Amino acid sequence: MTQDYTDSGSIQRTFVQTAQAALPELDQWSQITKAEVDMVADMTRRNELSGGTPVVRDFEQRWAAWIGSRFAVTVMNGTSALYSAYFGLGVGPGDEVICPVNTWICTIAPAMLLGAKPVFCDVDPESLLIDPDDARRRITPNTRCIVPVHLWGNVCDMDAALALGREQGIPILEDCSHAHGAKYKGRMCGSLGAAGCWSFQGSKPISAGEGGILTTDDVDLFERACLVGQVNRIAGIDLVGAKYAELQPLGLGMKFRAHPLGIGIASAQLDKLEELNRRRGAYIAEVEAGLKDIPGLRPCRVYDGAERGGFYGFPVLHDPDVMGKSTEAFVAAAAALGLNLGRKRYPNLHELPLFQKGFDLFTRNRGPLCPENGYTGYKPGDFPKAELAAERALFLPELSDPVANAAGVILETLQTAAG
Ligand SMILES: Cc1ncc(COP(=O)(O)O)c(C=O)c1O
Image (cartoon, rainbow, N blue to C red; front, top):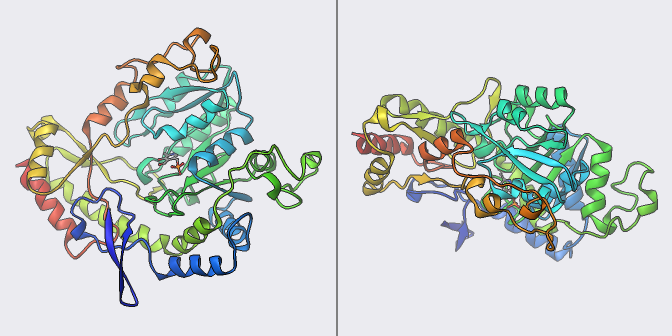
């Protein structure tokens, strides 16, 4: 998606945050403004291009304070934030990690690459978020971590997820890659479990182009996360205790460090997040309120105490029986009116051959997905609620700075398509 960006008279084509925008003429938000351009130019002039530069350090401190966590470390993307968090938690061969089946594959891939077995759980089809009761049923003595994903900026039932973690002695890792600025009962998402991870990939509510961050209060987790990805940046800086003194200054020699220019961009974007969330939230609330006049369409469930943020997608739920029209027919009618409703933005992971048939991840019949090593795989029908949710979730345009009456135009189009 592109949009004109005007800066002192010059027009540039820029990638905008509204990754999915159908009807782009309804959105006036420009993801890149002078602030990002100036930041990158200044940092480049200062040759602030590698390592834990002042901008990177400031951003980490600011992020930790904002989230309400003791520690934060930036990394090259959300996937490596999750890798660092799993490593921080000691996830390894023989362990199992539970996550909802309807997430982006990068939620679970780092655990797999650390040798842990991915275990999927079903979701609440009204919220599209983790069903903690189903997660409970999938716990075994090997379960090392449970990962609620605040998908599309909506907030998981964290009371239930945290209670489950406490009761079973299993750490909860929050994947906040879609939910920058979301809260639960007054606390920031990402500060509720053992650690929180965010993606700053280009279409995210805060973009670094590519980037990510991890937060935690747990010094052991944080130090291990630094050990695995920060190579010689750790010397005397990130390691707060003496536990790994012998491993300084090179850690384990792996490097997931963020590009400072990306973090500079993210830092300019963090300044604008509150406004972005306010605008997106108001637009979404207006459309959701209007859905009551369209039988067969309803908003996703929001749990008590949840305050959505980021809004990396705007799903609503279609009920063909109530509308008297199949989802295919409704989507086609909306498309004919110029409104493209996204469907199945992520595949349910158990539908992928990787998780159905398995894969010899480490070659020679090794690794957690290897059939010869006991991996049995999933099949269609294993997650009935997520499968139902995938059928009935429709993605509306997620406008960030809607033109006047954009919500009205969208509601009218939906109404006509439904009729
Ligand atoms: C839920 C979720 N987790 C993790 C990631 C990984 O983030 P990144 O693409 O920055 O590696 C993404 C990316 O879209 C995501 O959607």
